[in-house]
Length: 211
Image (cartoon, rainbow, N blue to C red; front, top):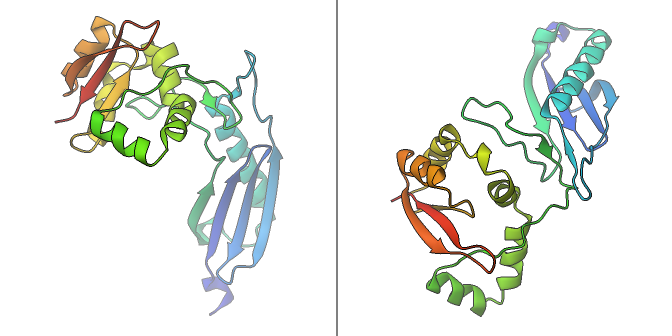
């Protein structure tokens, strides 16, 4: 294939300590690269590890801007882009796709101190599999559960509508927020709302079902 017909791939690697932009040719050979070091996280409270999403985006843009002068061919010859990101880092977004709070890093140690409420059949199956400890652990680590319990204000109606559209039929959303407005917003978003008995120290829980 003629040199002027060659095509390239841009790979973005948004890691914990740096953002790298790399260009490969169609034979898998590295053609050019750039690297921007980043601050992994800030810790406003003990055990927290978070970062502004805009900071990640600005670092990605900077890595690409530093890469372009290293190319000896037009950027239009880059025909595909692949992106890898930090494992387990969560960026909650609203219905408009914009972040509603800082990104929660995979290094974050926030946990909820409650356990999931399971139906009788699920409880039996999980007990038989001896997996209750693992289920409780995953539940306590889930960022969505922490946000629902500690920052219920971000669960606004537009976000709940987006969640409803993503859920499969007969799925459920469970939150420790039992405020009347949240229940009304869940109903308005299409959920069938139920009130559940809360764990020790919490009177009620709310469950929204997608029938």
